[in-house]
Length: 349
Image (cartoon, rainbow, N blue to C red; front, top):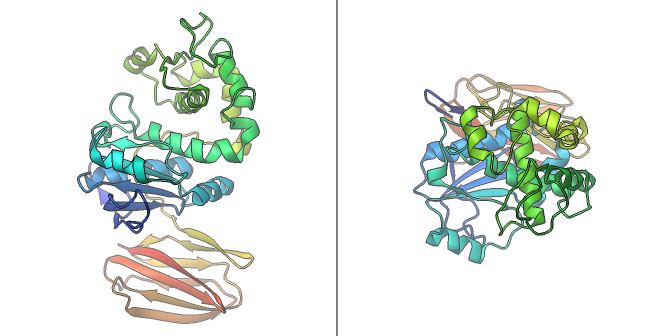
């Protein structure tokens, strides 16, 4: 956990566990966010910024901050694609070029640079691009694939493409010059094709509804690209997209990240056979609860050196594990039942 005057983030920076994966070897810092989103950073990136990216990702995925990803379908999709965001020291660096030349995965849809991150101004336009770039990854890798009828980015493919055509004043495969006067979304980057426009449109819509853009300076600064900068103006102007991103079946985040993530009951949820077991909190200085275990189980705890410091057998019962006597640090919780076994990282504070 880090804590300063502005932010509290309950994540731990680890050494890169995938340094042998093509494209990922240049990163030394790593954070696993809710077992479905990874932060990779060069050694020169300050820890506060690495953890800031992790906190923002967690807040977007776990918007109610109960310790679990809000949408299980989204979590599965992000896991399947190894969703990630890399943080580079600067744009067009050797590290960035190496990454894109070597990386052949499907989980990186955006990047971050050191100079565009500001943990004390989370998501503020012109100061902190973290919210924007993380949203891009979650949307592009997750939502567009799991809810194609709603969020597919091709022309005439989804409710979002229909809404974007209205927002741009027509369906334009190539950027018009100028946009129609009726348009309120008029992005003019010639390198951004229709699908790219849709991903940008999804971002603008979500953060407008969250209220992140709702101040005069920001509204003026983005007016050349996006007009409905306040929640009320977005709701009244972009009726189609407002209805889409607030539809509860898609579970899109509604609350703006603030860079703080340390839910009181944060934990781990996993399936053992047909049962979903919960371990929470996974950051604790007192007790850890293990719920919904069935059958005969062996619960063990190992310290960072691999030394076994606790073990207990249980049968069809929940368990309250007292960790108050252990030193602060990282531990591994092992849950074994027959041939099924799982290992989970626990932080004792």
